[in-house]
Image 1 (cartoon, rainbow, N blue to C red):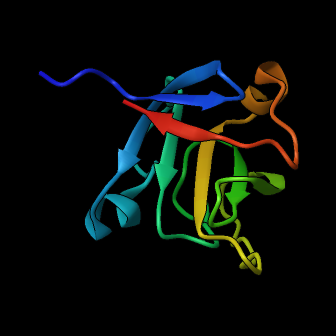
Image 2 (image 1 turned 30 degrees about the horizontal axis):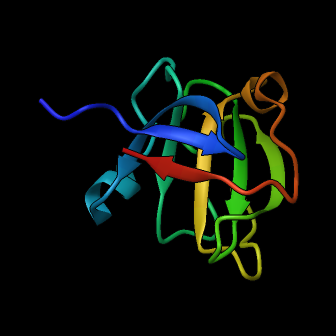
Length: 112
């Protein structure tokens, strides 16, 4: 079994991360879940929605160099607007980014 990848910012491990590597995985996202332990990384993506989701999420939009362009918290049943220049998205339970100290301008990466 492969090791779980980690979401890292400036050599700080923020959380374990699931990588949505296929279109089907990106479409499913966090639907039909009651929670997520860690984060979900979606690429390519420049917007997300929370229609059908059971919990609020923090969303970080990343540029092509994995710098955080925008952070929002979305309640269930919302449609996020596309973010110009965004190439990927990180999703986590609402409140996670504050706990992790993740801010606009931070560089993040997935390390395996």
